[in-house]
Image (cartoon, rainbow, N blue to C red):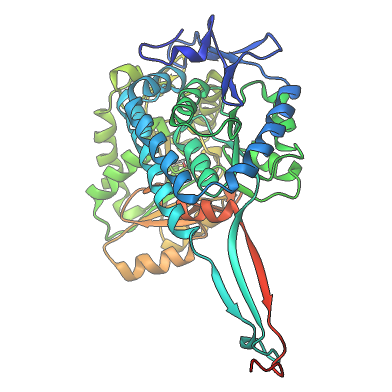
Amino acid sequence: MAGSGAFVELLEEDVYKYYFDGEWRKSASGKSVSIINPTTRKPQYKVQACTQEEVNKIMETSKVAQKAWAKTPLWKRAELLHRAAVLLKEHKNPIAECLVKEIAKPAKDAVTEVVRSGDLVSYCAEEGVRILGEGKFLVSDSFPGNDRNKLCLTSKIPLGIVLAIPPFNYPVNLAVSKIAPALIAGNSVVLKPPTQGAVAALHMVHCFHLAGFPKGLISCVTGKGSEIGDFLTMHPGVNCISFTGGDTGIAISKKAGMVPLQMELGGKDACIILEDADIDLAAANVVKGGFSYSGQRCTAVKVVLVMESVADALVEKVKAKVAKMTVGPPEENCDITPVVTESSANYIEGLVMDAKQKGATFCQEYKREGNLIWPLLLDHVRPDMRLAWEEPFGPVLPVIRITTVEEGIHHCNASNFGLQGCIFTRDINKAMMISDAMETGTVQINSAPARGPDHFPFQGLRDSGIGSQGITNSISMMTKVKSTVINLPTPSYTMG
Ligand code: G3H
């Protein structure tokens, strides 16, 4: 079922087409994949189940298109990206509507995701023309024993085909955060959107189509992971993989060939709250960080480590805020909306039941209807409970009481994850020392973890990822340095 204002040219009968060689097409498989609306738990959309043969054709076409694109002037690449950004913003409502139906993102946040994506694409175009317009000039006599007869010129060249695999929670924003850097750097892109979120991603791709990018440069392939998942990530045509998601990323990194990888995987982002913290500020951030988009963010606060002396005060304030949260459908802009699938809801419930059985204190009654789970704060969580370590990706937040700061740092560093963390204290010296001790890609002082603004570096340690994102880092990661060395005659050569 297409939403009002959706791009009808993407649909044939009731199945969304895939995008290849500048056209919307039906798969030869004759099969489709259903997308279940997390709120109604009924089929909402259908997308093409593409075949391996179709992936092969996409790769061949992508390779040819990339060669020409690499020679397209940078300003021209940037101009097309700016056009796509405008189109994305113009079509924010129909795209947001897909996000509401496919991933139950609250309507207001869905619009924000699309606008943020337009901003990201524009910024990327601006940044690209600056950083890709510069190279280096090195002279040889700076190295011991060398004369000044070699001049080295370096520039950044594209890698080739970038395979972009975004996650369900930001199918538009985390797609463009891969597509825009890849394109400005002169690469072609093959996008494999998540099943939940695929239709929003197809709408986003149509904005790039309307912007007038050359045929074959951008492709979007939909289908079953079992049929085309490994086939794509292990495809010899792929020159770079940028993936955001869960454990699948670990499997991909083991199977992928000798190509640069950019991986953003899970997080168990700790929030350390000291005795001297502004407890109102900390409570507001625990709620925002822990429960926005129902906790389905890799940067969500996933464990609160609070000093025992202020724990009662913090828990009371958080409880009061949680009591005011609205729970219900995304169309009504509720704070808490259904989690993405029934299996996610079951997983979250498993963590809650484990904590219950092991004696955690429930600050609210546990309540679930279908995929909708009411926000739940669990106090007195101990390290033997799964919730202390596992990522619920849902509106369930454990509180661990600590008696020393070292205990908090130790818990944070003992996790398999190392994405972000945050510290609440009024003592900046202490904050800096704790930040230094926390083994995470980013530490936020006096605010909840977050990826944005989207030009900030974003990276995780251990199982949280490979490489660093953020617009500048992504552009650099999707290029390679090329050197040209001019060899002058030896110093004995005379010019006269
Ligand atoms: O889920 C992972 C995202 O990168 C988190 O992004 O901090 O903007 O919500 P966000």
